[in-house]
Length: 271
Ligand code: PDD
Image (cartoon, rainbow, N blue to C red):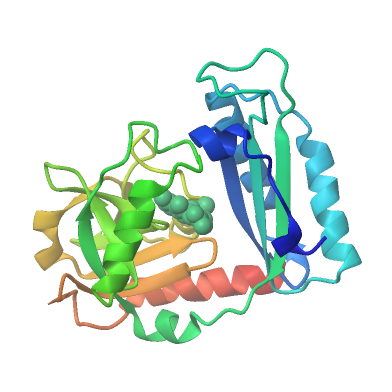
């Protein structure tokens, strides 16, 4: 059915409590990219919030069926599973409740290519999130506020930092930097989302013989950082050329970022 006609019950716990988890997957030329990895992360998110939805194989088939039937080529799949709707509002899990499965496939017009070539500006923003950012839950208010602050500052993204200056990730992207010749990204602790693109970029970097370490960057490192970039399902690999108005490296996408972008492009084309 048309997406704008979809209705969710007002007592759905995803709506009332943010009691739900989600995934966003890119489709290239009709084929979902890293589909199994995204479904595995969805399974982990479901288990982490004890949401007893188990039909991931059925979901996979239904998504593929929609892509095939409507002949999607360049598209985005959005999947959300909520704990479902009860007859009244209670914080505790209801005893008998059917999880709600919601997904849509939408054509994707990729207008980020100029930014992948030229780089983007970002701001830094305090991380106001909870202690389980590894769960891909739909409780995104801190992310929304940080993304909006970036937009209002004329920046593409907000890099979230802790009170001690630790840089974790963007509001909707993972973050990498090159410091002293080494590619760094925050380790997968409960403080970040384990990005699917992040994992792929780490693999590509190792295959390219680039020295990699899963270690956090700090705000104080930024003046010494040679390159900085964002990764994400729709962003892919997006160079950062300015943080809070300060130029990063040479002020243009750096050589390691370029190599990884090329490796990413080759991989997508080979599939
Ligand atoms: N965002 N970090 C956060 C906080 C994110 O929300 C996302 C994804 C990422 C990148 O993860 P991946 O490489 O698996 O897309 C990192 C999705 C796309 C979103 O909320 O729309």
